[in-house]
Length: 157
Image (cartoon, rainbow, N blue to C red; front, side):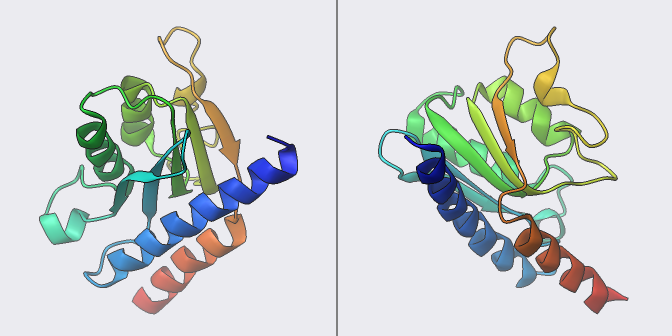
């Protein structure tokens, strides 16, 4: 796949994650979305959006919900041959789940300078001592992802 074709595929995946993020707004959660797309055929095998407020669960992050769904579809805790698309850089908890799931590729929209664990504050996804380090692509549709978050927090002030 050419670099241009890969960029087009990544933008399409991020648009799906953005659609998931918008779903979080319906129940007052921070609009972060994630999808897991199978590499071989482009089928979404897991999707999630933040549901911390809805479920009163500090672990109900978009990435964890999407990875859990993908594991069920795949019949294994290993989420292989797939890409995780997420609108905001994963936090330490979610980055840890990425490592543990063995997902080979992570694409995120905007960086999180306060809690990002894929290069901003920490880089859990590139620790040589850990048994898995996925490929990471940063900044896909970053402006759109960031604006969705900015609008959410502007409305709260």
